[in-house]
Image 1 (cartoon, rainbow, N blue to C red):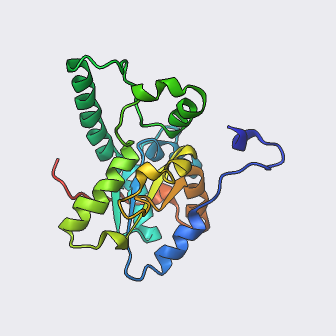
Image 2: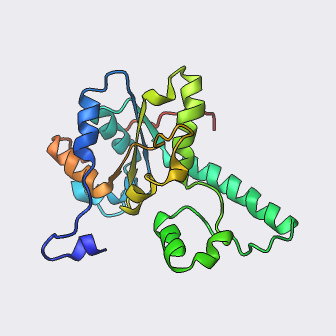
Length: 218
């Protein structure tokens, strides 16, 4: 919120678009992938002259392909995995009469930071699951890479997120692979993406729809 209201712009998010753009223009052996959070497909519309709240899912996928991403995935799929894993964990805690109840979600990095810094006594009550972003990124590094016969080290993965706290989240050791590599290379906020699209002369409003890429069935 400080980045929104600071009158001198002394505080601002660290824009990742220029680093990501340089990779997209010269990917070399890298396979570029991106995931989009559910909120991003709604909040971006207003910046391009569409009514507030307009869902522009297909247009957003088209725009990201135009920017150079080879694969565009839906974070909702990661959310489905999170729901299954968190529900399983909750049932197991209840059945085992765990003292760590109630169980709180682990999906929001700002919430996790708050608990760690201000209420560490609640840490045992936090779900051990990764966030939706983290689950999808890990799956891309493993299952997707194996299915497409790609070296996971050659996947360059970006997440389009509405919240700058996600930039902090991807730096956490829990969201790194066993060799220490980040599972998500960069987070681009919706505000950053809007500036990037306008800089690239891409008019989201007038783009055709493109479906998300998938590597699992429904």
